[in-house]
Length: 387
Image 1 (cartoon, rainbow, N blue to C red):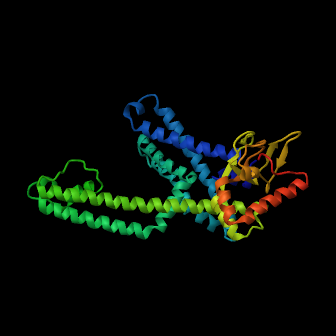
Image 2: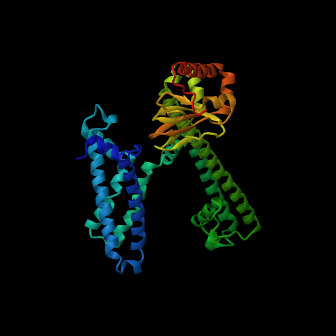
Image 3: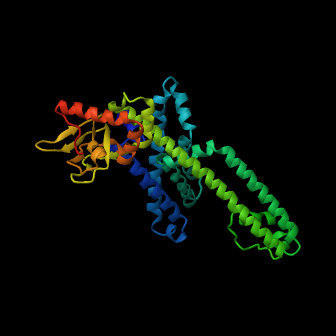
């Protein structure tokens, strides 16, 4: 029988165990299947045929699975690490009212309620489109975007205000200029607002087009204003998204750097510089990190896992805290051995160009690497392998 810890790992979107990966795969299959069911049920010729029974059966199975999943997540919410010190019902309510809790609730409640209320089944199955929101749990990009929108809400709101000003001003001028000539398209402000929206967004359906010279001039100006507004929005979001990605990557790398004992004595300022230069690399069991004879252009620090360096007469096994490939940073020569991950391994990679730039400003880093390699060679466990 599965334990609470095993259940928590199963439902954790970041755990890399086989059951957790299978759970994520099931989510993707279920969501894609739900979308296919919703699409097929909306086609009369499909719904009226022999496909109705398997479509309903598939929807019921997925609906039941999502209902059970919601119950499991609700039960373990009271035992999560972040909920320590809270009463179980408080932490469960906190999870249930969180965005992910609401998404999991919408995955089964609307369709179940529609079926119980007697809604036509082919219409109730349309609620399967809500299942696509369950995939947001596996999309860090959406989380980053939400944070960017919160952080940049004032600039975004300022651009929105400019958009509304341009929208109503354009609609009013279009109504004044084109109202008499085209009452069907510009005879009222609501009609002119439709033209202004399609023009500002540069959609231009063509159902309302200025016919006077002044109206066409106005249309050109409105289109340019629309391009400017959306360029501002895109610039704010793109800049914020890029900065947030760099911030998250820096924090993740900084945390990983602290796990490598070799970096403990380098000082916080040098560690911060390293965190900006080091790149995280993950290798599955059996994955080849470097091959003998390859051009050596970087070195690696082991955060977790194990690396087998295939040297003669017997291979060398490196564990957390070790590094390899440092000769490449000094000579730029080819690799002298092949390095393979014996289990899932997380590495920090330092490129030769970044190392030389950092070593020029911080020579203590190069000195520390040389000294550490020399100490290990004296202990007859050379970590200057795969160089």
